Structures are given as C-alpha cells and as structure tokens.
Length: 564
Ligand code: TEU
Ligand code: CA
View 1 (tube, rainbow, N blue to C red):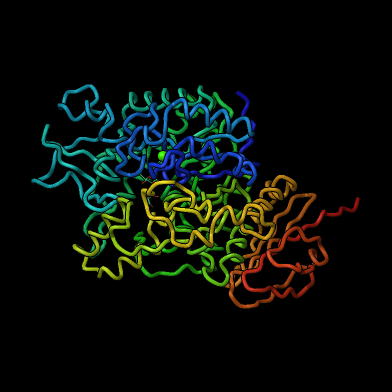
View 2: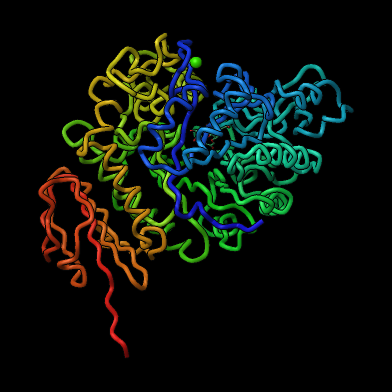
C-alpha cells in the first residue's frame, strides 16, 4: 500500500464522546450525538477526528479500560450507529482515528477472566502474574492512579500488574499470542474503514525483565516504575513488527501516546522512513508544571521554558521525524487557563495560543471546546469529581501524605483531568445544550458566556480564529514544510518564531504578556504582508513593533531569488 503521508497536512479534532453531545437525554454523550455535530466540525475545517474510546467498558477509567475491543459501549450506541457516523464523516471528507488501548485491558475482558482462573490457564501469560515477597507485592512500583501497581488475587494467590487502576491489568507483550490478537483486532477495524489509531501509553508495552524495584524519593509511598516500564528494551521491536504486520498495509495515520519519550526515541518512533508510526505525543511541555514528576502543586509555567521545550522538539525532529502539536487533551487542564489569561484577556490569549501552536511544524490537534476557549471548571466539592485519578489522589494526599484538603482542592482545580471533561458548551440553554437530561458531570458554570452558538457565526470569535489557522495551513505550504527558528529565546514576554522554505517565509509573533511590549522585527521581514492579527486595526511590519496585551500577528513573504 502506498503511504501518502496525508496526515502532514491535516488538522485533528479530538472527541471525548462522553462529554461531547448527548442525543437521547440520558446525560451521557454518544455516537449519534457526534453524527449530529459533523456539520459543525466540517465548518470548523478539521480533517480528522480522533475518537477517545467507544468500546465496551465497565468505565473504571471512562473507557480506557476495555472489556471487548470489537464492541461498542451500549451507552454510546450500537455498531450500526458507529458505521453511520463513519460513513457520514467520510461523506464530508473527515477521517476517523480510533483510540487503541492495548498496554492494558479491563479486568472484565475475557482474556483476563480466563487468565485469573488458574495458573495453567492458556491465557495466564497474557498478563503479568507474580508471587509476592514476604506478604508484600512483587516489587515497589506505585500505580499512576495511587496505591501499589500490584493487586493480590485470591483465586491463585498471586499478584497481577496494573500501571493504572486495578481494573486495568497490563497486557504481557512478551507473549506473541497477545501481539497476534492485537494485530488481528487492528486489521478488523482498519478493514471496516477507520483511518488510523491513537495508541494509548504505547511507550509502556515493553517492561524490563525481572521487573526491578524503582527508585524511591524521600516522602514517596512507592517506587517509580518509569525507568523499567517506559522505553523498554523491546518497544521499537514491537512497533516495527506491528508496522510490518498491520500498519504498512493501509494508508493511515498513527500517533503514539508516549509519556517519558524524548527526542532521540521520537526520531525512531516517528521516523520519516515510516518504519514505525506517523507521529507521537511528547509530554515535556505539559509536564513543565510537575515537580519530581508529580503533577499536584503550586508551580507555575514559565514562558521561556515552554519556548525552550517546543523549540527543542521543532528543531530536534526537523527533516527526520514528524511532530504532533497540542496544548490540550482529555488528560490535561484547559490551555487558556493554564498557559493563557482567563478574565480580561480570555479571548485574546485563547486566539494567541491558537496562532502559536498552529503555525508550528507538525500536525495540530484541537481538543473539543478548545476552539471556543473553554476554561477550567470550578469544583465546589470532592463530590463533583468523576475522574478516578482525582478521586484517588485526593484521598491519598489528604489521608496519607498530610496535605490539607484546601491545598488539594486548589491543585486539582488547576491540574485535574475533569477540567477537560465537563460537557461541551454548545449554547446557553439547559446544561449548555449538551443534554436534555442531567449531565454525568457538572457543566462549567460559565456556559452562558462561553459557547459554540455564540461564536460559530461571529468573525471575531475564538472559533473564527481556529478556522483562520486551518485555512492558512491549507493555503500556504510553508505552514507544513517550513523550517522553524525560535526568536528571542530569552524573552519571557513573547513567543515568536519564523518558518521558512526556499520560496516562502512566515514570521509569527505572539505576546504572552498582559502588558504592552515591543518586538524587533527582523530586517528581512520589514514591510512583509500581514496574514492574521487578533486585534484590529492590524499593525504593519515596522522595525519596532508595539504589541498590545496578548497580541498575535502573522507576517508572510514570498522569497525573492537572484540568479548567480
Ligand atoms: O494516559 C496515559 C498517561 O500516562 C497520562 O497521560 C496519565 O493518564 C495522566 O497524565 C495522569 O495524570 C492514557 C490516557 O490518555 C488516559 O486517559 C488513561 O487514563 C490512561 O492512559 C490509562 O489508559
Ligand atoms: Ca446519550
């Protein structure tokens, strides 16, 4: 199959189905609800939908715990609804990429049900079963969602490994039967016509033999599994095998979710030779807030650091591999709250974040609601939480680690995943127009001010800014192909860069400041043409450019050559 790399020119929109649009009033977003909104997405201009999991699941982690990889969760609809959505999307030229969650399954998957029955069951080795050590788990690893990464099972008196919740047992990729089953299932979806996969924690599928104890920091309850579970010895071997067995047979897009992966590993994962995946999601820019790998705290993001990380990835993969570009997803807080300015500069900063991300090299991702500037929510009580990570972390921090409830409420409001999972704000009607019933999670109280209905027809809206960024990408090849150079790396006030090819050059200037600042336009871009500004009137490209708070400007120039 010829691999056309169409995804280099594409813009992806992520849907978290549970929170997107409810068609039948049960308070849970569903597949017919997505089909209803395809016109909205076509109008936005996106090319691809990445659909968070819609498979059968007991929902311990909202669908990231799958009990049947070939069935649709009845809460979301039927397989016929899925086929209809796929056909309707394709009719509009929109592709659909599925979430592939195969580092682990649900404990209610048939493989695990078999596996836990007895030590000699043919499925036993589909998972990691180990004896305990003196009444304790086999090693000191902690789970991502609090507590130990091991669960004792009385049926056979052994422990099984789960890097995430105890209802998400890790699949044993060392077993070639596991890999064979996964590849079969992938071909089944691809033959149905889906356009690719986003691969959940794919950097964790190879674990170091012997599963050694992880390093443990003072004050920590558990050891860190990262050195032994991420970037494992056989990771690239498995992905290359998957590529040969499955991916190379289709002209699709693949994106690996790869926490813990740096530029060097990424060059293998997303190599231009197409031997592994199309691209990966790196985590460095969204982990800048973490201290010692821990996301709960009061640390602030520094613009200079953000620029350094983004530039490192832009330059590091240049000509060798392909970047993905994202500020948000269903695991991250809202970008306007995290990197921008809520309040007075909400709109300007949301637009500037759009400009800053979409003019970089790579495939941009828009998370549902980002295109209208949805913000972090307000948690009045712990009972508002739905996310297993938040619920467990609140308990662990306040009960075992001596953190005050007040601090933990504040940290979760800042970094918690439920910020991204409040219902999509369609209108100012009941429950933001998301459902006629009671939503499964509270609506962000600001839906009367921030909603899609208000913005979709307004040429000055954040929505229109996203449309404009998508149009620019389609119109100017330099947005896809241009080499990235960061300008003014030491400034904490602006995030600016150029993109250039042999025939075109872009200058992208983004103020990340609430105060007026000035910016020195490089000589060769003085008097260049303006393509976009989030203020009017737009400035012209003079040597000393005065930028208004959170102003963003894009200048463009065709390059002129003289024959030698
Ligand atoms: O996330 C994997 C992951 O390592 C992190 O993004 C992590 O969930 C987050 O940082 C916790 O703060 C993927 C999915 O995107 C996530 O929704 C799932 O919960 C997780 O895998 C398990 O499937
Ligand atoms: Ca529903």
